[in-house]
Image 1 (cartoon, rainbow, N blue to C red):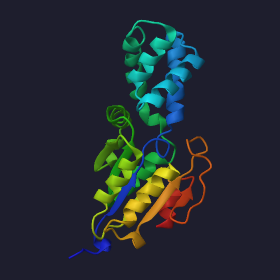
Image 2 (cartoon, helix red, strand yellow; image 1 turned 45 degrees about the horizontal axis):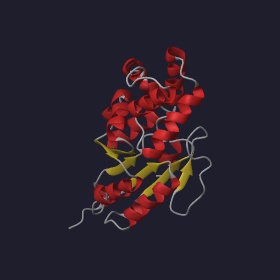
Image 3 (spheres, one colour; image 1 turned 120 degrees about the vertical axis):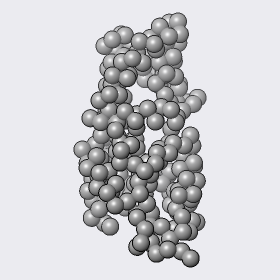
Image 4 (cartoon, rainbow, N blue to C red; image 1 turned 60 degrees about the horizontal axis):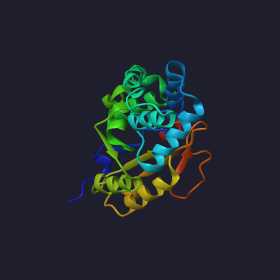
Length: 225
């Protein structure tokens, strides 16, 4: 027998980068640190990052090794010491959240089941999430190496009768997640999907779509529920 969704906690499936965490601002600090402490030119830093992202999922170590290669330096010449400074940056990771992110997570954690579902290199993403302190508001953190993997997790998590609220930022990725939610046994009529449109985020502007609501402030999510 399927339990009524009214008797179950809302299942929140929330993205990390660009929805909650201002990754561009964090990476800007990372790149400034490389220029200030190691003299890495901005153009070299950007070129190395692009090369990494073309070949594999991004992480700090791959980026630093690519910089060494661009500069013709021995491996670990920059990376070893730079990673110690990365750890220092990460100790202040909470300051890189968007202003509405932590209050939102605190509120939904009180009466909902919260799943943080993030696409990217798992150890890299886990390191950021752990340093940020966000885990204390999550029942579970999940990292997937493919965008389609997020849709697969939605299908798995959206169990019978559940009311599911998805908060994401990537339109194409979200459409795959919506398709998975529709094909699950969750209560789709009671479920909602929100895309967070950040002016300083990766996806701006976000085109409208019949299956999701675009918001710029997470406080607006609660207003729709």
